[in-house]
Structures are given as C-alpha cells and as structure tokens.
Image (cartoon, rainbow over all chains, first blue to last red; front, side, top):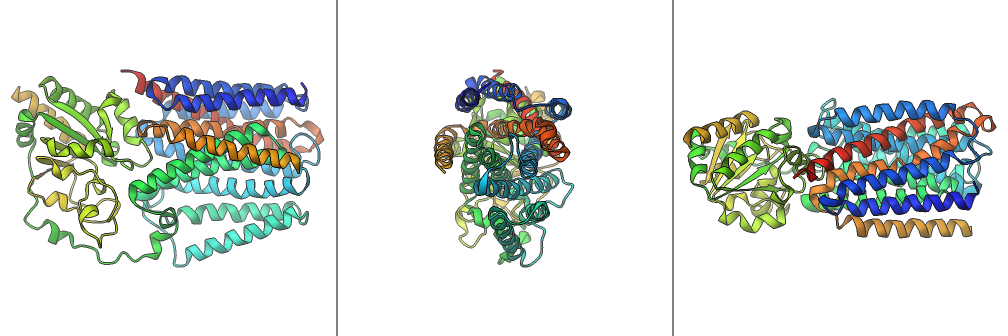
Length: 464
Length: 94
C-alpha cells in the first residue's frame, strides 16, 4: 500500500475519532460515538498491519493477545466505584506505550519508526520525558486511589525545588540528544530521571486534588502520543494525541475552577503552605450538633414535596448507590420529587457520581449539576447529604480566612432541613470542620451510608 | 522543515478542535469521556505495531520494546473502549 494511501486511511480514522467524541456530547448518542471511535482505531490498526514495512507478525501477535485479554478482563471486572483507579491505570499504560515506542525508535537505525534528523531526536526526548512521567505519575495516583499509598500529601521540604532540578536536568539531556550527542546510555538516564519525576510530582498531591491530577495525567497521555507521532511523522498519532491532550486540559481546568484552585496551587502548593489557623472542631460543633434517627428522618420525608440527594465519595465507599436509588423510588411512589445535586468534584474524578448513579439506573435528567440546582435549594424540603463533606461546607462562602474560601459549593443549608448521613464528625479531605453539621436546620444521621439509607427506606415503608 | 510546519499546524488545529468539542460535553459524561479519550490515546499502538513488526532490520531490542508497547497500548485501547461502552450503556438504559 502506498504511503499516501495509508495516510488517507489515517485521516479516516482521525475523522471517526472526532465524530466519536462529538457523539459524547449527549447521553443518547454516546454509545454510538464510542463505537465510532473504536472503529476508527480498528481502521488505523488494520491499515498499519497491511503496511509493507511490517515484516514479522510474531511479536505483534504476542503483545496484542496479551494486551487485549488483560484489557478486556480489566474492563469487565472493574467495579464502577473503582473507575478512578481504572482510568489512572489506563493513563499510565498510555504513557508507558509512548515511552517504549520512543525508545524503540531511538534504537532503530532504519525502518518505519526510525527518527530522522534533530527534529526526530527532539521528539524522542520529549516523548520519553512525558511518557515516563505519565507512567509513574499514574502509578502513584493509582496507589493513592487504591489506598496502597497514603492518600494525604507525602513529601519533603523543597520537593518543588527538587522537581525543578530534575526537570532542568531532563531538558538539558534532551538538548544534548537533539544535538546528536550521547547514546543509548544518555537516553536511559533521561528515562530514569523522568520516571523519578513522575513519582515526586504526584506524591505530594493530597486526596482531595486527585480529580485534577487524573485529568492532567489524561492530558499527558495524549500529548505523549502526539509527541510520538512527531518522531515518525505519523499524522493519526499527532491528531488523536492532540485531541486527548486538549480533552484532559479542559477537564483539568473545570476541576480547578470547581475547587477554586490554581493548577500551580494543586501541583506545588500542598506542602509549601502551612495551613494557617485551623478552626477548632469542638468549638464549631459543641452542643449544636443534633443526632437523629431513621424514624425521625422518615417522618420528615413523609411530608416532603421535594427532596434533593447530594452524594459524595462516601457513597462510593459504602457502595450505597443502589440503596439510594431504592429510597428515591420509595419516595417517588409517595409522590415526592427526588433530584440529585452533583458537585463537579464530588467523588474522585470528573463525573464519577454520575456513573455510579447511572449504574443504579437513575435517569440522567435527574442528575443536576451545581449551577442548575443551587437556585432551587430554598424551595427544597429535605436535602440528604450522603458521603459528601467539603462540597457543602458553608465556610467556602462565608469565611474569608478559610483555605477553601471561594470554592463554589452546593448551598444545601438553604433547604428547610438538611440530613447528613455520615459515620462521624470527622473532617473531609480539606481537614476542616463543617459548620453545616451544627446548623439549626441540620440533622445528623450517624452510621454506615448504605445501612443508614436502608434503614430510612425501611422506616418509610413501615409508615406507609 | 516544510513537513514539520505542516505537522505542527495539524497539531494546533486538532487541539483547537478538541477544546471546542470537549467544552460541549456535559459533566454527566465526564468519566466516560476520560476513559474513552484514554482509549483514543492508545493510538500509539500504530507506532508500536510498526516497531514490533520491523523484523530483523532493526534488531531484537526494537522488537522487544515494540512488543511491550503493543501490550500496554492494547490494554489501553481494548480496556478503554470496553469500559466506556459498559458505562455509556448504563446511561442509555432508561
């Protein structure tokens, strides 16, 4: 097949990717969109395999079978609650793939992946850097999400300076390689430095900022693929990599806005600032927290016209999505309106709560984003907050000195009654007490999220 | 050099197109968007195939690295598209 012919097919697959992503703008067309993108990938792969420059199929078959079975196994076995880990893992594999392609390209003196000239060498250096950072950075993110590593910020004083030094060194090596000096040894050194950098970049980021980091690594995996495209002048790699890079960047920005944090603050700020004065939790809560029971709350729910459920990461932890759906069904049978209010950073990745609720067969028209639901809390009878904390903390609105001041929150406290389902009064990711728990119109329902919701449904059914 | 300018143009235009497209995607679908775009970034598979299939021309290490890259990229592609499909089907169900 001639090269221009191959490139035409690559164009077709790029178009399929774009149409596929466009399909994702609506839930109705999203399944088809994903399928189109998958067909685009198939086209690219088949055309590449038919390329004359492919001489042996043994290695390809081995790698393909291994990868496909591992991927299929992961995709079918993974629980919806563990989706952030899965995406972190996939980000890492994407980065790793680009890294190894770049290394193979450096080693091949001729053939289809050989780099040409200093542009090719520069592209190799950049791909190795970004790919390796994505690989180990995602590994650390996975470890934190899977709770194999401590979720809070870990590091040492001056870690930002250390990272800057590593990055400077990496850039110097890339410049040397681009100039045509050095050999495989120098490339391996660059790889090692970038692998360490991936770890030290992500390890100081705390659990609350994980959505930002996952989105950013998503972007990196795309940029690494695009950089690999520049090595061998492959258009489909450049276009698709750029699309994914842009996608990750947009999500990163959305997450940052939703937390009122700057990207630099997320990446470098967690250890440098010493927290300032932390509010005393006892002072906030003393004598004002009202503990309630399932029976009491169910009496409130019996007369409620409009109920809003606000889920957070605790919902995922307790695997309570189906129980919540049952409660909503019970309420709806009694003629109560039930809506779900979703904060953009609820959970540990963008859109995480939506997926869990969709798994429990909640209609997506009932999942309302923050901007849409906030004006309506004042007309809401009961808000049930389950496993969410910081995203409902009124300090973000009221206390200028608070570290979360300015973060957009769900104004649940404007509802007539707020029921907070929670294990204890322990603080959320931000480590702050939540004055919402001490408000006059707030009732605490202590206990395991799933059990508490089951009890609530039971009490409602008894009353019926 | 001319080739490079063309490629950089392609990259920049694709980024702009990506930004325009992605901003239209509702928050509800952000998780499937991430896993789906992840699968798309597995396009590195194309480069991996070329490396692993280059035969004896480039030596053993190129083939081995190519195979590792194929394995990683295929996990990305197959796992990414399948899990995205699984999620999106749940959104369509009702």
